[in-house]
Image 1: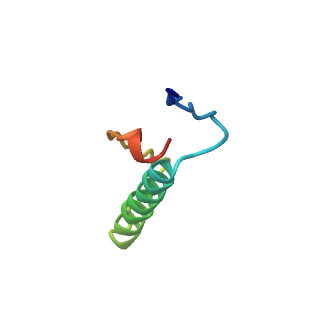
Image 2 (image 1 turned 30 degrees about the vertical axis):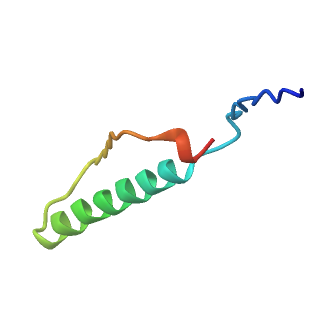
Image 3 (image 1 turned 180 degrees about the vertical axis):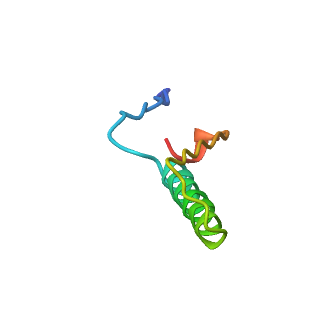
Length: 62
């Protein structure tokens, strides 16, 4: 009788995940939108910061 033992492979942090890329795009879009609305209302911005937070199910990524 032969037994097969399944091994779990762990990912190595070698870059951004697709979900992180989507979040980056969303932050860029949000920031550009804020800047465009401010410019349309003649509001001069000194800085704009966008922060996104979300949850990620890594079962499909690893």
